[in-house]
Amino acid sequence: MTQLITSLSNIPPVAVCLFVFVWLALESCGAPVPNELVLLLVGSLTATTHSGLSPIVVVAVATLGSLVGASAAYIIGLRGGRAAVLKLGRRIRLDEKRLDGVEAWFARTGSFAIFIARITPFVRTVASFPAGMLRLPRRNFVLATLAGSLIWCIVLVTLGHILGANYDRALKLIEEYTVPAILVLAAVVASYFWLHSRLSHVGEVPAAVPATSETELASEREQS
Image 1 (cartoon, rainbow, N blue to C red):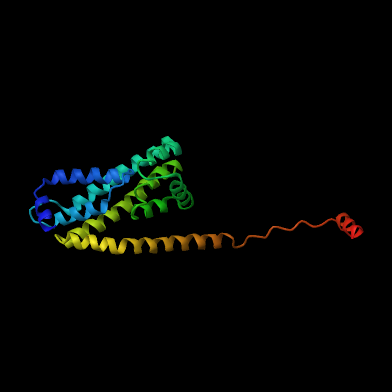
Image 2: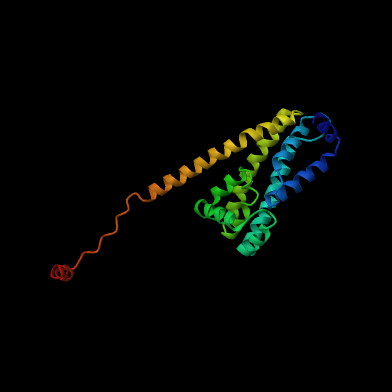
C-alpha cells in the first residue's frame, strides 16, 4: 500500500481534485460508490511532500462535489416525483420499501434528517431524493447538506492525512467503528422520537365518552 501511495502522489493535483469532485458528486446522486476509501486515500496523499495537494483544497473540492451531487438528486426528486425516483432506484439499490422509510423519517425531522444523512454511510447516497419529493425548503436543504458534507469530508481527509501512508490502518478503523457508530446514532434518533412522542401527548384531554341517554337505559332495563 505504501508503494501505491507513492505512485499515486505523482499524479497532477488538478487530476486528483477533478477525480474527487466527480466521485463525490456521483456518490451523492445515488451511485453506490464508497467515498470513505477515496477521501482516506487522497488524505494520505496530502501527507506526502511531493504530491502538491493541500488537505484544505481536497476538503473544499470534496464538499463541493457532494453538494452538487446532492442538489442534482434533490432536483430529480422535486421534478420527477416518486415515479422518477423509483425508476432510478432500480439502478442504485433504492426500492420502494427503503424509500418509504427514508421519506417517513424526513417528513418527521426535516432539515435535521438531511444533516444526519450526510454523515451516515449508506443513507447519504439516497438521502437527497426524498428531500426533493417532500419539497423541503431548498435553502435549508443546501445548508444542511453543506454542513454535513463539510464535517464528513474534514474528518476523513484529516484522518487520512494524519495516518499518512498507513492507509491500511485507516481502513481497519473504518471497518471496526462504522457499525457501532451507526448503532449509537440509531439509538439517539430513536430516543429523540420516543421523547417527542411522549411530550406531544402531555396535556392532551382524553376524549369524553358519550353519555348514554335515559331512553337507552330504560330500554335495556325492560329487555333484562
